[in-house]
Length: 324
Image (cartoon, rainbow, N blue to C red; front, top):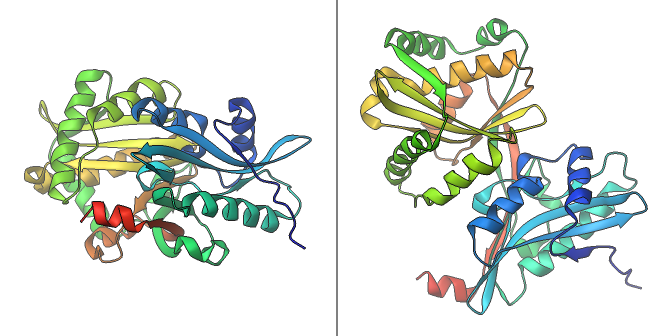
Protein backbone atom coordinates (compact mmCIF):
# COMPACT_ATOMS: atom_id res chain seq x y z
CA UNK A 1 0.00 0.00 0.00
CA UNK A 2 1.36 3.38 -1.01
CA UNK A 3 1.75 5.82 1.85
CA UNK A 4 0.52 9.34 1.14
CA UNK A 5 3.29 11.91 1.04
CA UNK A 6 3.48 14.47 3.84
CA UNK A 7 4.91 17.09 1.50
CA UNK A 8 2.97 20.27 0.80
CA UNK A 9 3.84 22.54 -2.12
CA UNK A 10 3.51 26.14 -0.94
CA UNK A 11 3.78 29.14 -3.24
CA UNK A 12 4.98 31.09 -1.41
CA UNK A 13 5.74 29.55 1.97
CA UNK A 14 5.15 31.54 5.15
CA UNK A 15 8.28 33.68 5.44
CA UNK A 16 8.58 33.55 9.23
CA UNK A 17 8.09 29.78 9.32
CA UNK A 18 10.60 29.29 6.51
CA UNK A 19 13.21 31.52 8.17
CA UNK A 20 12.77 29.55 11.40
CA UNK A 21 13.49 26.33 9.49
CA UNK A 22 16.58 27.86 7.88
CA UNK A 23 17.85 29.06 11.26
CA UNK A 24 17.53 25.56 12.73
CA UNK A 25 18.90 23.53 9.80
CA UNK A 26 22.58 22.63 9.77
CA UNK A 27 22.43 22.14 5.96
CA UNK A 28 21.07 25.63 5.25
CA UNK A 29 23.07 28.14 3.21
CA UNK A 30 22.51 31.76 2.28
CA UNK A 31 20.72 30.47 -0.83
CA UNK A 32 18.03 28.86 1.32
CA UNK A 33 17.08 32.15 2.98
CA UNK A 34 13.89 34.02 2.20
CA UNK A 35 16.01 37.06 1.32
CA UNK A 36 17.66 35.16 -1.54
CA UNK A 37 14.31 33.85 -2.79
CA UNK A 38 12.71 37.28 -2.76
CA UNK A 39 15.62 38.69 -4.75
CA UNK A 40 14.49 36.56 -7.69
CA UNK A 41 10.85 37.48 -7.31
CA UNK A 42 11.91 41.07 -7.97
CA UNK A 43 14.46 40.21 -10.65
CA UNK A 44 12.35 37.85 -12.77
CA UNK A 45 8.87 38.99 -13.73
CA UNK A 46 6.29 36.34 -12.98
CA UNK A 47 8.67 34.19 -10.93
CA UNK A 48 7.26 32.31 -7.92
CA UNK A 49 8.96 31.18 -4.74
CA UNK A 50 7.85 27.58 -4.23
CA UNK A 51 8.73 25.45 -1.21
CA UNK A 52 8.26 21.71 -0.82
CA UNK A 53 7.55 21.48 2.90
CA UNK A 54 6.87 18.91 5.61
CA UNK A 55 5.09 20.44 8.62
CA UNK A 56 4.50 19.28 12.18
CA UNK A 57 3.13 20.86 15.34
CA UNK A 58 6.32 22.94 15.73
CA UNK A 59 6.14 24.47 12.23
CA UNK A 60 8.14 23.64 9.12
CA UNK A 61 10.17 20.50 9.83
CA UNK A 62 11.90 20.13 6.44
CA UNK A 63 11.84 21.70 3.01
CA UNK A 64 13.32 22.32 -0.43
CA UNK A 65 13.14 25.84 -1.90
CA UNK A 66 12.77 26.60 -5.59
CA UNK A 67 12.18 29.49 -7.94
CA UNK A 68 9.64 28.61 -10.63
CA UNK A 69 9.51 30.78 -13.71
CA UNK A 70 6.96 30.55 -16.52
CA UNK A 71 8.54 30.31 -19.99
CA UNK A 72 5.81 30.36 -22.65
CA UNK A 73 3.69 27.24 -22.22
CA UNK A 74 6.30 25.68 -19.92
CA UNK A 75 8.34 26.60 -16.86
CA UNK A 76 11.77 26.34 -15.29
CA UNK A 77 12.36 25.03 -11.77
CA UNK A 78 15.61 26.05 -10.04
CA UNK A 79 16.73 25.21 -6.52
CA UNK A 80 18.22 27.79 -6.55
CA UNK A 81 18.93 30.03 -9.63
CA UNK A 82 22.31 30.08 -11.37
CA UNK A 83 23.44 26.79 -9.89
CA UNK A 84 23.57 28.08 -6.33
CA UNK A 85 22.82 25.74 -3.49
CA UNK A 86 19.36 24.36 -2.85
CA UNK A 87 18.20 20.91 -1.92
CA UNK A 88 16.69 19.60 1.31
CA UNK A 89 17.11 21.21 4.72
CA UNK A 90 15.86 19.64 7.95
CA UNK A 91 15.22 20.95 11.41
CA UNK A 92 17.84 19.74 13.87
CA UNK A 93 16.72 16.72 15.84
CA UNK A 94 14.06 15.69 13.34
CA UNK A 95 13.20 12.02 13.71
CA UNK A 96 13.81 9.85 10.63
CA UNK A 97 15.61 12.49 8.49
CA UNK A 98 16.27 9.95 5.72
CA UNK A 99 12.54 9.44 5.10
CA UNK A 100 11.90 13.19 5.20
CA UNK A 101 14.61 13.85 2.60
CA UNK A 102 13.27 11.05 0.40
CA UNK A 103 9.74 12.50 0.44
CA UNK A 104 11.00 15.98 -0.33
CA UNK A 105 13.23 14.84 -3.18
CA UNK A 106 10.43 12.76 -4.72
CA UNK A 107 8.08 15.75 -4.59
CA UNK A 108 10.70 18.02 -6.14
CA UNK A 109 11.42 15.43 -8.85
CA UNK A 110 7.73 15.23 -9.78
CA UNK A 111 7.59 18.99 -10.34
CA UNK A 112 11.05 19.26 -11.91
CA UNK A 113 10.48 16.30 -14.21
CA UNK A 114 6.91 16.96 -15.31
CA UNK A 115 6.00 17.39 -18.97
CA UNK A 116 5.45 21.13 -18.39
CA UNK A 117 8.96 21.72 -17.00
CA UNK A 118 11.36 22.78 -19.73
CA UNK A 119 14.43 22.83 -17.51
CA UNK A 120 15.22 22.04 -13.89
CA UNK A 121 18.32 22.33 -11.71
CA UNK A 122 19.29 21.53 -8.14
CA UNK A 123 22.74 21.79 -6.53
CA UNK A 124 22.77 20.14 -3.11
CA UNK A 125 25.79 21.12 -1.01
CA UNK A 126 27.32 18.00 0.60
CA UNK A 127 24.35 16.10 -0.77
CA UNK A 128 23.98 12.41 -1.48
CA UNK A 129 23.72 11.43 -5.14
CA UNK A 130 22.12 8.02 -4.39
CA UNK A 131 19.23 9.73 -2.56
CA UNK A 132 18.19 11.76 -5.62
CA UNK A 133 15.57 10.17 -7.93
CA UNK A 134 17.10 8.85 -11.15
CA UNK A 135 14.66 10.94 -13.20
CA UNK A 136 16.75 14.01 -12.30
CA UNK A 137 19.95 12.41 -13.62
CA UNK A 138 22.08 13.15 -10.56
CA UNK A 139 25.85 13.48 -10.71
CA UNK A 140 28.60 14.51 -8.32
CA UNK A 141 30.66 17.68 -8.52
CA UNK A 142 32.63 19.56 -5.89
CA UNK A 143 33.48 22.89 -4.36
CA UNK A 144 36.54 23.88 -2.29
CA UNK A 145 36.24 24.95 1.34
CA UNK A 146 38.87 26.30 3.76
CA UNK A 147 38.25 25.93 7.53
CA UNK A 148 39.20 29.22 9.19
CA UNK A 149 40.89 30.08 12.47
CA UNK A 150 40.78 33.07 14.80
CA UNK A 151 44.55 33.24 14.32
CA UNK A 152 45.16 34.35 10.73
CA UNK A 153 48.91 33.97 11.02
CA UNK A 154 48.48 30.34 12.03
CA UNK A 155 46.12 29.84 9.07
CA UNK A 156 48.59 31.49 6.69
CA UNK A 157 51.33 29.06 7.69
CA UNK A 158 49.19 26.40 6.03
CA UNK A 159 49.22 28.22 2.66
CA UNK A 160 51.43 26.72 -0.02
CA UNK A 161 54.77 28.58 -0.27
CA UNK A 162 53.81 29.80 -3.76
CA UNK A 163 50.62 31.38 -2.39
CA UNK A 164 52.55 33.23 0.33
CA UNK A 165 55.12 34.39 -2.23
CA UNK A 166 52.45 35.76 -4.59
CA UNK A 167 50.72 37.59 -1.73
CA UNK A 168 54.03 39.29 -0.90
CA UNK A 169 54.40 40.28 -4.55
CA UNK A 170 50.90 41.75 -4.53
CA UNK A 171 51.59 43.74 -1.37
CA UNK A 172 54.74 45.14 -2.96
CA UNK A 173 52.68 46.23 -6.00
CA UNK A 174 50.93 48.90 -3.94
CA UNK A 175 47.43 47.43 -4.19
CA UNK A 176 44.60 48.50 -1.90
CA UNK A 177 41.23 46.92 -1.10
CA UNK A 178 37.98 48.35 0.20
CA UNK A 179 34.32 47.46 0.41
CA UNK A 180 32.02 48.98 -2.20
CA UNK A 181 30.20 51.93 -0.68
CA UNK A 182 27.70 52.99 -3.32
CA UNK A 183 26.24 52.47 -6.76
CA UNK A 184 29.34 53.89 -8.48
CA UNK A 185 31.43 51.13 -6.91
CA UNK A 186 28.88 48.48 -7.91
CA UNK A 187 29.02 49.80 -11.47
CA UNK A 188 32.81 49.47 -11.38
CA UNK A 189 32.46 45.90 -10.15
CA UNK A 190 29.92 45.17 -12.90
CA UNK A 191 32.30 46.45 -15.58
CA UNK A 192 34.93 43.99 -14.31
CA UNK A 193 32.28 41.24 -14.17
CA UNK A 194 31.28 41.77 -17.81
CA UNK A 195 34.89 41.39 -18.96
CA UNK A 196 35.56 38.41 -16.72
CA UNK A 197 32.45 36.41 -17.66
CA UNK A 198 32.89 37.08 -21.37
CA UNK A 199 36.55 36.06 -21.14
CA UNK A 200 35.41 32.74 -19.65
CA UNK A 201 32.90 32.23 -22.44
CA UNK A 202 29.79 32.82 -20.29
CA UNK A 203 26.74 35.07 -20.54
CA UNK A 204 26.92 37.99 -18.10
CA UNK A 205 24.07 38.46 -15.66
CA UNK A 206 22.26 41.82 -15.93
CA UNK A 207 23.31 44.80 -13.83
CA UNK A 208 19.87 44.81 -12.21
CA UNK A 209 20.79 41.65 -10.27
CA UNK A 210 23.96 43.17 -8.82
CA UNK A 211 22.11 46.36 -7.99
CA UNK A 212 19.41 44.40 -6.14
CA UNK A 213 22.04 42.45 -4.20
CA UNK A 214 23.63 45.75 -3.18
CA UNK A 215 20.32 47.28 -2.11
CA UNK A 216 18.67 44.21 -0.56
CA UNK A 217 21.34 41.81 0.74
CA UNK A 218 24.26 44.07 1.68
CA UNK A 219 22.27 46.00 4.34
CA UNK A 220 21.19 42.66 5.86
CA UNK A 221 24.80 41.51 6.18
CA UNK A 222 24.26 38.74 3.64
CA UNK A 223 26.52 40.13 0.91
CA UNK A 224 29.43 42.47 0.33
CA UNK A 225 31.30 43.77 -2.71
CA UNK A 226 35.03 44.50 -2.59
CA UNK A 227 37.23 46.29 -5.08
CA UNK A 228 41.00 46.07 -5.45
CA UNK A 229 42.63 49.25 -6.75
CA UNK A 230 46.00 49.92 -8.29
CA UNK A 231 46.32 53.62 -7.78
CA UNK A 232 42.91 55.04 -8.66
CA UNK A 233 41.98 52.22 -11.02
CA UNK A 234 39.79 49.25 -9.98
CA UNK A 235 41.46 46.12 -11.35
CA UNK A 236 39.75 43.29 -9.43
CA UNK A 237 36.86 42.63 -7.13
CA UNK A 238 34.65 40.06 -5.46
CA UNK A 239 31.08 39.46 -4.43
CA UNK A 240 30.90 37.47 -1.19
CA UNK A 241 27.76 36.01 0.37
CA UNK A 242 27.47 35.19 4.09
CA UNK A 243 25.47 32.86 6.31
CA UNK A 244 26.02 31.63 9.87
CA UNK A 245 29.81 31.97 9.94
CA UNK A 246 30.36 30.83 6.35
CA UNK A 247 31.58 33.15 3.59
CA UNK A 248 31.25 32.20 -0.07
CA UNK A 249 33.16 33.76 -2.93
CA UNK A 250 30.25 33.89 -5.36
CA UNK A 251 31.97 35.89 -8.08
CA UNK A 252 35.66 36.92 -8.29
CA UNK A 253 36.47 39.32 -11.16
CA UNK A 254 39.65 40.90 -12.50
CA UNK A 255 41.30 42.57 -15.48
CA UNK A 256 43.51 40.17 -17.38
CA UNK A 257 46.01 43.00 -17.94
CA UNK A 258 46.48 43.32 -14.16
CA UNK A 259 47.33 39.70 -13.39
CA UNK A 260 51.06 40.43 -13.11
CA UNK A 261 50.18 42.50 -10.00
CA UNK A 262 48.53 39.43 -8.39
CA UNK A 263 45.27 41.18 -7.40
CA UNK A 264 43.37 37.91 -6.86
CA UNK A 265 45.99 36.67 -4.39
CA UNK A 266 45.88 40.02 -2.60
CA UNK A 267 42.08 39.97 -2.42
CA UNK A 268 41.88 36.42 -1.03
CA UNK A 269 44.57 37.04 1.59
CA UNK A 270 43.04 40.27 2.87
CA UNK A 271 39.54 38.76 2.85
CA UNK A 272 40.67 35.70 4.83
CA UNK A 273 42.44 37.93 7.34
CA UNK A 274 39.27 39.97 7.88
CA UNK A 275 37.07 36.88 8.17
CA UNK A 276 39.38 35.26 10.72
CA UNK A 277 39.29 38.42 12.82
CA UNK A 278 35.49 38.45 12.64
CA UNK A 279 35.19 34.83 13.82
CA UNK A 280 34.05 33.20 10.58
CA UNK A 281 34.49 29.43 10.51
CA UNK A 282 34.66 28.53 6.79
CA UNK A 283 35.50 30.06 3.43
CA UNK A 284 33.88 28.52 0.35
CA UNK A 285 35.88 29.21 -2.81
CA UNK A 286 33.03 28.00 -5.03
CA UNK A 287 32.71 25.17 -7.51
CA UNK A 288 35.31 24.38 -10.18
CA UNK A 289 34.90 22.52 -13.47
CA UNK A 290 36.54 19.08 -13.28
CA UNK A 291 38.98 20.04 -16.03
CA UNK A 292 40.01 23.42 -14.53
CA UNK A 293 43.34 22.19 -13.19
CA UNK A 294 44.83 25.66 -12.77
CA UNK A 295 41.84 26.98 -10.85
CA UNK A 296 41.80 23.92 -8.61
CA UNK A 297 45.52 24.33 -7.86
CA UNK A 298 44.90 27.99 -6.97
CA UNK A 299 42.19 27.08 -4.45
CA UNK A 300 44.16 24.23 -2.94
CA UNK A 301 47.25 26.44 -2.57
CA UNK A 302 45.34 28.20 0.23
CA UNK A 303 44.69 24.91 2.01
CA UNK A 304 41.12 24.50 0.70
CA UNK A 305 39.84 20.94 0.37
CA UNK A 306 37.11 19.50 -1.91
CA UNK A 307 33.57 19.12 -0.61
CA UNK A 308 30.94 17.22 -2.62
CA UNK A 309 28.03 18.72 -4.50
CA UNK A 310 25.14 16.57 -5.70
CA UNK A 311 23.95 18.12 -8.97
CA UNK A 312 20.62 17.15 -10.52
CA UNK A 313 18.17 18.33 -13.14
CA UNK A 314 16.95 17.79 -16.65
CA UNK A 315 16.15 19.54 -19.88
CA UNK A 316 13.04 18.53 -21.77
CA UNK A 317 13.18 17.64 -25.46
CA UNK A 318 11.30 20.89 -26.19
CA UNK A 319 13.96 22.91 -24.37
CA UNK A 320 16.76 21.11 -26.22
CA UNK A 321 15.11 21.84 -29.57
CA UNK A 322 14.59 25.51 -28.70
CA UNK A 323 18.26 25.79 -27.72
CA UNK A 324 19.35 24.14 -30.94
